[in-house]
Image 1 (spheres, rainbow, N blue to C red):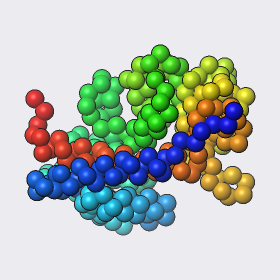
Image 2: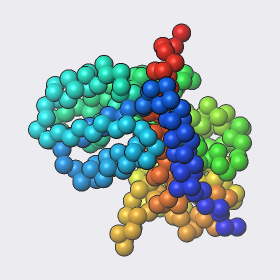
Image 3: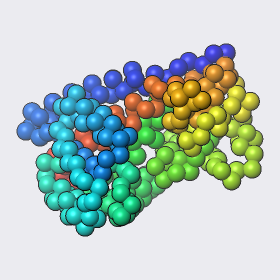
Length: 287
């Protein structure tokens, strides 16, 4: 068996076309979804991520407001700027690119963003909405993973899903989204005694720890769906994931490549969240 590739680039393109159509529908009502992107400092990787987000906005008709500040920006000044954006009705989503300079507390910054504009889905209230099944914003990477799993046609009801990783940004929300889809979920992490014992029972595996070859072919049940969230470099400097792709591809039924799998979906779901924020604002407050 050779696994079918789950094409994140193609799915992303389809979803972005839908976003563009819905943006046009809002614009016919004189509403343009607006995303504010804040970058503090000169981290090269962050600059690339921000540039890609701004381009994605332009491609789909979402208005982006990019604000770049020196690394010396004070925490109070950043919080004041976020407060102003919270009060701006033309801004529907606020994203502060991480990491921040060491003198700025990231949790403080995330919590300062209004829940209605937390399109990254990282704040405590957003996490609580996810845990309790309320219609809040889902963190973009796990949200994208769920869309990728949907393309395989697997019915998650009653299936065993294993999430490798317990981060607040991917692992934990991924597990909650799988639970919402009625999967039975196991979370594995660095203290798990025998990870293979769990993964060999899984119908779906999501690897999200940032470590090369954390999942190998002998740890995968034949026919499983494998989603690789990892972004690493191999010995030749080429981009690779957390999964031993060559080996696992011969066992799984479906697998995401790196690059071209989960990566394109993260920014796409940011666009979806921003669009949904604008649609909710247009509909008025929830009863």
